[in-house]
Picture 1 (cartoon, rainbow, N blue to C red):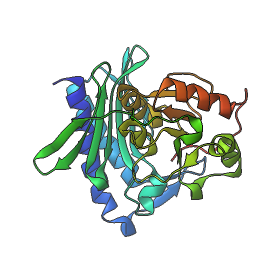
Picture 2 (tube, rainbow, N blue to C red):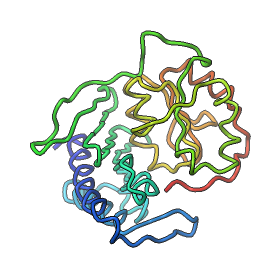
Picture 3 (cartoon, rainbow, N blue to C red):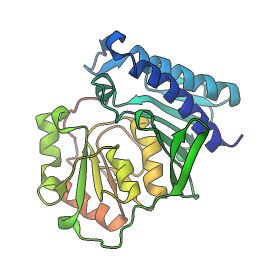
Picture 4 (tube, one colour):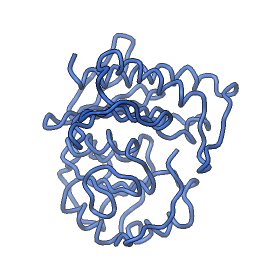
Length: 273
């Protein structure tokens, strides 16, 4: 089985487990981590299901997961965010994701993003483009290549901006961080993770104000393979902890970075859920 097919299988296995817990939210205990973010048994169960699939097929590979940390070693590392958007999940909001990526020699080469409650999946493999499909009882249907480009390209002032997390979750420091960009771009709501809407060509820019490697590994590759651009606000093109920027193309990305003018020492921001 190819790495891409394995990543999809693992992500969909996790999605199935996540949906079972999502259907019984009233019975789901919730805890707070030391950083104040929410964690549930669903997060742990989804990660365990993904690790089982990956471990059975690639026992020599390392796995880095948000809940269980890193196991194994070597130049190949699977990166797992079992429930990206736990705060959305526990509120019954259907925008949470399951994210699985593969890193080889420091480069993300495979990425899969599943939105289980909306029955949608995105994937990308380095050099092979980005794709989207619906999840059905028989598997995946309606698979199609996606593109971040749009024929009526406007400059920064005419761009559509998504901000992650939702407005209600933003801290004052995070609002200050994005204020220079939101002053010139039109902030837009997102019904699906805003970075995936950049990959689809429905948004021009997305700022994710907080995140860890597992929050960005899969979505960064999907956006890049759709023709878009990704980096931290310091310009680092590989996924690293902190705020990040997704853009439909390199020119818009450069303009947005210049507007944001990330400080040398970024403000202390809450950790992603």
